[in-house]
Image (cartoon, rainbow, N blue to C red; front, side, top):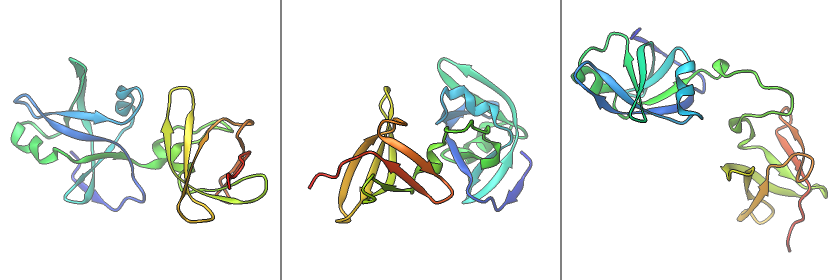
Length: 177
């Protein structure tokens, strides 16, 4: 553990510490990455301990009976490891791999305004649902401020354009009246 307490602009949460494993200070990690082992490709990690992000380094890691385990550098017993239980695991956004054109991270799409071909504001992307076949935008707000629209995230069919610089998504979607 580097012990570096720092202000981090918009850390990206990629997991959570689930519990202590064994007597040498190992921790169980609940990863939000897919596959779950991808969380180990990000170095260093940031852990929110007492609401302060701390940069930490992983000494060792392993997958044990379908569980992801890590050993934080400098944490050598279960008592110290227990201080990290339920801490969020995050990375700096610049640690994410660069995407190709027409690829987007969900975090970049949530909060964007959604307009249809008639230039009617359907609302804002409030969340994205993974369905297996394709992702689905949950668009809330709209004209009445209460509507909820589900739009499949299929480029060139329902989604015409994503303009990150203007924070707008244009879709081919008819408003039901």
